[in-house]
Image (cartoon, rainbow, N blue to C red):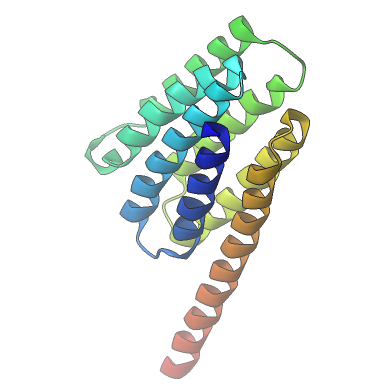
Length: 171
């Protein structure tokens, strides 16, 4: 019941992330998304991914205020901690995938400073998570991943077309 509820919350938050145009809102929604996924993986008895999601949730909260940081040490610390947690708690071979996806997400959310690049990163990460969710039997969230990928693609194309129109009108 809780796993299904968290999967539904994840769908709603991910659609919001796909269509928002403000980076700060992306980071806030990402925090909420990651919190719901932490709960979902915990109640799905996926200990390795749940523990990695504790780091992801903390990192997501800090990312909301990333403009206040003067250096790029935080994502590297988070990546190292996620790898260590994953190595210590690894229960099956498929969980290596969750460790790698978490590290990629940590990297792109910190270093991609453009909303369009964030959307591309989100498409890549959600595609990878979709594959992982197939292995874990989380089919509702698999549908959410598909919706998220499609929503991000639509938002990316729509924004790109708007940018072209603006550029064309100024010429």
